[in-house]
Image (cartoon, rainbow, N blue to C red):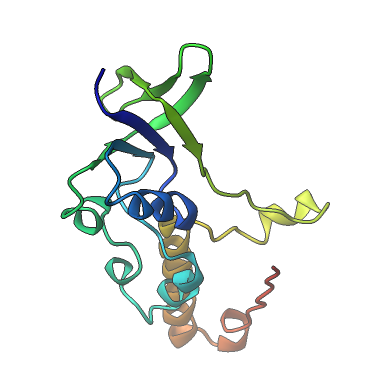
Length: 166
């Protein structure tokens, strides 16, 4: 029998914390995430407002874990769990699928956007939970500033409402 296999789904604070916490354990760890980077979400607003470049808040998993010999990273979308067979189903970026076996499974897949019962707000209040969403918002803000420079009435382009909740 080989080493104990630990599969961690999700590379956010929880999942990455588990992987790093097992650094000295005699286990084989597979971290599965749909992105290749850990995202420091509290600083997304600084990317959106062009104060920080994306790389400052999204280091690659492979760079973070490069010295951790018992951990590997698998880029893919988890599509299911077979708890009886102890396997995780993963769709890979190349369109193929894979089954990853485990002895211990940790699911730290993150959270969802919430409009607190007002889903109709989603059309005018875009979420900001991913790097792509922050970059899209940054582009929208920069376009508004550029448009304001050329506008007869720049005020219409320079009015923003920021709403956040925790």
